[in-house]
Length: 395
Image (cartoon, rainbow, N blue to C red; front, side, top):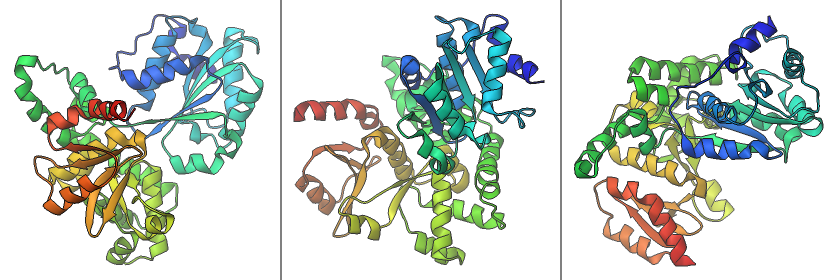
């Protein structure tokens, strides 16, 4: 049984392999370049954001320079694997191909959290065996519970929804320089659809609805044994309606008639599944703790499915957040006036085809840091260059 499953999941053992998947070059490059590094690569992010596809793409690259029988892929949630440990699966892999323990092998373990003992097993692999390990997981909270054993051994790679350039690539859209006027229309489509790969490819609203049901029921309700599913759905709707704004767990508790502690727990569950991304206020610890966190939806397409396609300014800000998330931003708030993002070096204000108020502009100009105003599609598309230019100017 297990041998049959391994052959089923690893078609390259029996012939040529092509994933026929769209590239996500930035993530692929980082993951592929890690192939010789002594670390476990943990690929994480929202359910169905493309983690499995990235594993297959990295495998495809590895096959160009390594023997096919040195590479194992397995989804640990597969039916029939329930009674096997990861070690037993790997031992069967070695047995099939007559690999000694000294042979360098590449393991791709999808949905690793389905094995309760995963952290101990990965630690043993890392410490004692000649293996390069890639794993995926969709539940940040469960990873935090067990990663003490893996401290210093794991490198996290959070996969975000498709960027606009990736969206165009997935849709096979090429915009000629002479047709740049089409950018805004395609960008509005992107603003509406979001970046979940399969939804971008099919446009099937039923797919995104099913995804949300899976996220709520499998990743929150079932895992945390929540009795009132309706309450979780209502909480989810409140979070999506607050996307791009401050979200108070106390206010949401009052609206739903639950305790603040329960509301805080629910907030953490949604964060752990990557359905929301909280953003703290800039400032000292007491200011950060007293202030509500701004939140951004894990995908704007999911947010639109819940709230309808409205408030384009908040959606636009959500996409800007994804572009700068790696810079660990916070939001700045003073005397009732807010600046959307502050990083170590930059102040970034987002206005979708609108302008700052005089007071906001005055505060924006008075603060230290390289200032970037993102107020159009062109501004969004040039944001990366602006960040680089600001850093060069600082030097």
